[in-house]
Amino acid sequence: MPENGADQRLPQPTSDGSMTLHSARFGQCYHSRHGARTESDHVFLDAGYQRATEGRAKRPLRLLELGLGTGLNALLTLDRWRRSNAGFSLDYVALEPFPLAVNERAELALDGIAGALEADHLHAHPDAESHRVEWAEQGQFTRLKTTWQHFARNPDHWGSFDLIYYDAFAPDSQPELWEPERFQEAFKLLREEGTLVTYCAKGAVRRAMKSAGFRVERLPGPPGKREMLRATRPAWNDLDIQRFNVRVYFFLLDRPMVGGTLSAKTRILLSDECLAGRDCTKLPGGGLEFGEGPMDCARREAREELGQDIDLGPLVHVTGDFVRSAWRGEEQVLCHYYLATLPDPVDFRVADEPFDCDGQQRESFRWVPAQALNPEDFTFAVDRDALGSLRQRFT
Image (cartoon, helix red, strand yellow):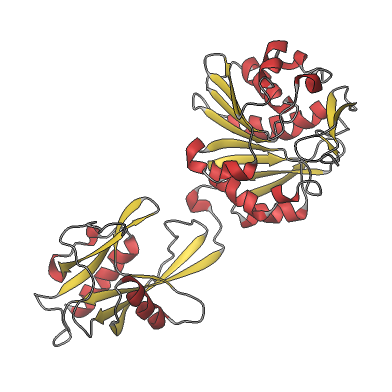
């Protein structure tokens, strides 16, 4: 097998008369020998592009292709977009770490698909890290000389996509591109109701897609293949619940209760924290870890967040209704809330204003009079429900 960047890629005819290339590096052809164009039309255009454009109106279509290869998928997409007189713009981004040289594409007979000039432009400047082509006024094509793994490290840079053509070489040649982590990355790159299509229908691939959160369909495959896969990122509220996330929080009071009620002077500690780029006001606490109970968790979280121990009181509230995680739609959240006080004087920084963080800290704490605390002060509905339970029981 060739080493480093070298690869011997030889033209090969396929059953429908279209051409492909055979890669010595990967030991495979770029397309099906049963028909390169037939496969691309069936898998990527009919099952992917057509699905993504139904009822699209004027909403822009953003498409990501893994494995530009000969450029067949891109040219067929450009041709269909043009022929349909689509009212939406097309932004096509293709990843190809090994772009074709001019002499390699010469025998592929791609000129008749969308035009000779377009085929030339697609593969121009093969040494460039990024190559961009304007497709009329409403279309653009960008080729990136990079791997999927490198691209997926920074999903926010390129934004989200409506459609992914997942056209890597088969799992026996590129196993790293069919691992569960790749489909988790694809899931994050897609918008809600976005679609991923691929020719590969192996059971391990289908299970990896499902574990990433996709809704997966097995569709009839192109000639030579019994099935293909189409995966859709569900809307947030339609995601299948795959696991529980147990959270434990505490109402930390600045003084013990007298007579089982909150006095007019009692204050409650709030946590103002930046979570995943979002400013959130909540109660101190966090996630339950293996090998600990809810009370153990509350004490550990106090030591980690406040730097000192707490005395735990009674359990105040437990979530009774279904709650979906605000961050991971496939998780169901179960929350416990305790009363707590400090056995020793305060030994952590207390802010006067919300989100008054010190230096590199992303979390600040402040006391708020219990009677003045408004449910809307909390970011999450579960905390608002817990505050209602606290007042019902202790006022």
